[in-house]
Length: 111
Picture (tube, rainbow, N blue to C red):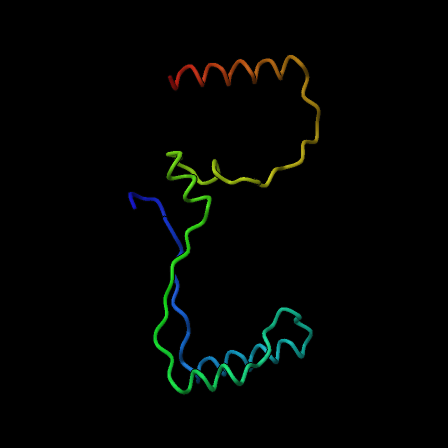
């Protein structure tokens, strides 16, 4: 909406033939040591063979809701725990004062 992605949308795979092939590939990967590979689920495949209606969905994240409600232009400004780079050097008091002054000027300009 207006250049902003509100949610992720998806469609579930309901074709039992394709699903079986994908799960067989996952089992091969599991045999090679991939612990995250899915196991074969024959009961699920059987249920799909009886007929499964098309399924879709949408998921909106809390970061997107916060961004909308706080009128942020960038999702990075709404992330609760942003990825931070480690600080490799200490900041001197004079550098810290310059940064604080710059921040105050920017805030005054916004008003």
